[in-house]
Amino acid sequence: MKFPKFEAIRKLGKSHTGRVAMLAIPTGVVSALLMGGVAQGAVPVSFAISGTQFKISSSQLEGTGFSQYSGVAKDADGKQHPVVTANIKNATLENLCQSAVQDTPLGKAGILIKAGGKGTPASAKDLQIGMTGLKGDAEFKNIRIGVDASKVNTKAKGSKGDFSQDSDTVSIKDLKQDSWSTTASVFTLKDMSLKLTDGSETCD
Image (cartoon, rainbow, N blue to C red):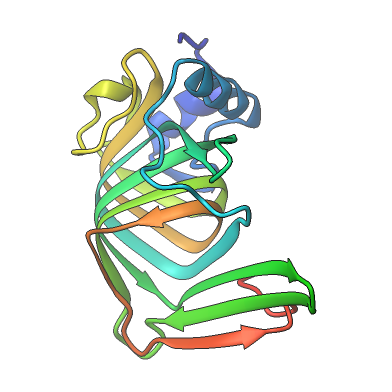
């Protein structure tokens, strides 16, 4: 897939910092690269996802070894859901929150997980996230925008010819994210708490 040179992307490449939504790729470009990834059979999430998206928030994410490209998440019925796949080799997340809400025969039910809020952040190795939305204040070091997804600087890679970006480091303040999936080789949740809710408490 080939994409024209968008002014917003050129500006980000110069500044390496700024308010981001989907990590600074304009919405139109996101839609194009996502559907292109579906059409070309981009690398899928390695397990059947549930039918419920979940929210993640963190007051501060710090990561090394970052890449991002289009992907596909499949549910148990085989339905494909386009996602933006983000990889981070090592990540720390302060005041981490994860929430999901689902309809049940008894009404709405939710789960709320919090960790890393007492001075020791949550941490993850080989973190991979299949997301549909992200907001926050981001800064990248040594970012490359427009690199072939099969040539990114992380172990996990996308499909040849697909649009992607990578960087040595990523820092996101006030992270808010909607996701279908999260995987990690190690995920350490310091001072974790888990709460069953009526669905009214989420990571907004």
